[in-house]
Image (cartoon, rainbow, N blue to C red; front, side):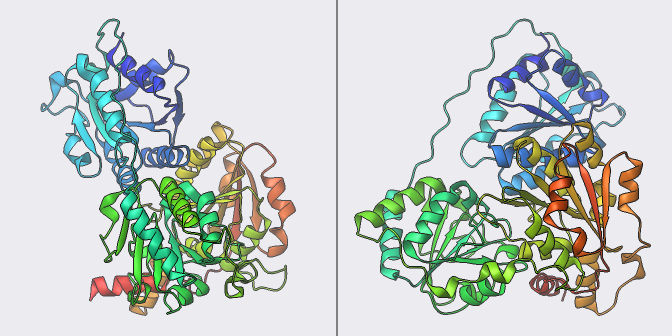
Length: 553
């Protein structure tokens, strides 16, 4: 049996289901082996960069590690960006890149690249495999490294001759036990005592990590009666039509969240599952933490106290920590459910889409209309751009819906690839990708990948004929802008038509009602909806501009 086949069969044994990537000579031994391993399904993308985002989103949603492969040379470097994204998001994605034959290393082979050091700073492990007999065990080590402790991506560079070498019949490697997360019980008890002492004078800020425990966090918030805000990546961890919801904080913050979290009505801020970066904290707004004590819960101990002084750091798996806090509060006689203050009511009304004809047609009203028309179990998958800022602020995520965004390291077009992994992760969930014309011109051909695998994704492309976020950010910062940031409008619907895809062109709210969205999602195949807007309004991105000004001057 070839060395790579033994390695792939080991991954199947661990539950790995997909291989994302693009075939090429230096990794075709992998694709050839897949003919004999039907349990491992290839998803052939249009660009290696997109395949990495597919793998990342699939793994983030399912918790199942995925495999992403690329050729030597440019194929490998095209995976660097999504590997860095997986690193930032702590996702156990296994990246494999091919290489020229081991006997030809250093002799100038076509597309030769020493990839190991390139990936070293953005993975938990990066290694070049030079002995075929060691390949299965090294792959097992990489897999174990990816899922152990704080998860993260790994990378192996494997020369083509090493992949193809027959190593005979081999038993599959056996993994060592993965240590289960433990809770710092003393820290949890101290945090519970401080929460109890705060009474009603507390607030909660949820990051992406909180999504693993959203149900128990809702019970926790209702027990305390504390207002709940979410970071951009945390959006969806708490239903925004809940009376305790403050909406989003950070980039494109909801006014209610900013007013409350930056105000002086609470003495304790409970942070759950956030690394508290620039976009999560409104450019590290000093008022967020001024005059109050911080309780920070995270499964990565390195995040605790990294940005702000944390008075009560609690390390552990978030779902287990919340359960422990609820038990502590119950033991101390905390009420099962606190009264919900009228101060928190009204976000749903503030963020819900207006009735047709009541709003001027623009990006904001289109996003609000799409939110109101979406199914109650929809997943919104956001790309990166001006529309993203409106979506963070105006897509109202209700209980049963989900929201994903690769905002910390996602590049333009990352959503077009990432949404494919999301749809594969949850095939029965209606999935809507909100992207823009600039993103589409980078990685729009992934709509063909969706077509080829019959994935019923609704791609909503906001077309304002410019790099909107760049344009407005530049104008806000420098008060002038090159004409090159804009372009003559190109018909995205026309491109979709030429690709044989279902499509629609939208120019008003009357064309963006629930019956339209239901019809687009009913076909069992991708649909491209082009939303044509002028895009002249300034998007809600002021804090981001302040950060860039600070970095420039």
